[in-house]
Length: 90
Image (cartoon, rainbow, N blue to C red; front, side):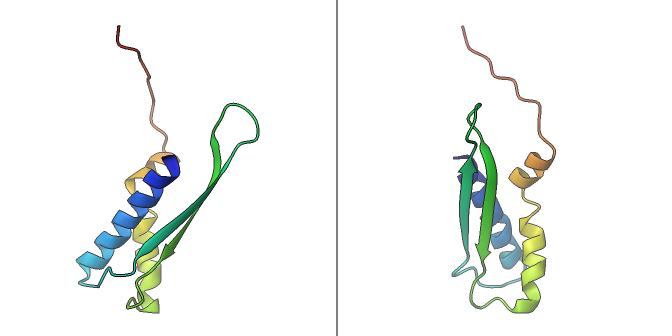
């Protein structure tokens, strides 16, 4: 779920870039792979995302779309972690 939320956020931002510039989104894909830690606590230690741009997107626009996609909310949150409080309702 963690890796999926990051990939979904990246795809949303990439799609929004394309839409904002009147470019087709058909064919846009985001692949993700992640590695779990071998020790405790259970956690994700690495995530790799690959954005597959739409075939119609010119090479000149790749860097701009990548820049926008890497500033998605989930990615930003990972760089500036929030304070997390988990409680139990009585």
